[in-house]
Image: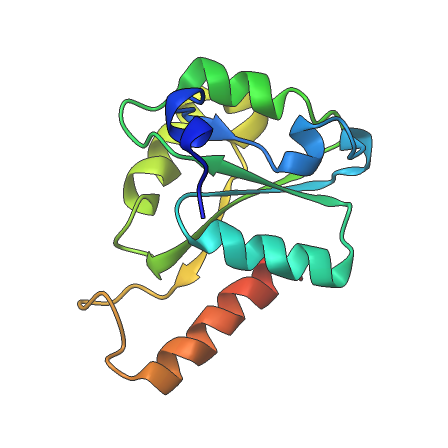
Length: 149
């Protein structure tokens, strides 16, 4: 449950790092892979990262999708000096969600960092989901597995 101060003292932030790094506990120099994402998928990725004890991966949430928070994103990514892999991770199919735009825009905005940006998502589909909860669960697990592969 949220506390009242969460609504009165905290303001919206367009880009969020994991609390471990924001609090200065995590060692950013160990990070080799950054997973860029948005929304609730972050929590599944964070749970897997904690379960696997992966300090070589950082998860960065982009919470403001438009206009893209270029300066804040650059400042955040610059804090990770050893990264050689960047991935956009989304639940939506490849032709939906943020990827169709971000796949083009992010490398142009930050060419020194994101020129090799790769996507992890469901395959391109005409519908937003498979229509089967079992298939959805398998696909969701594949996305998480690929992100940490």
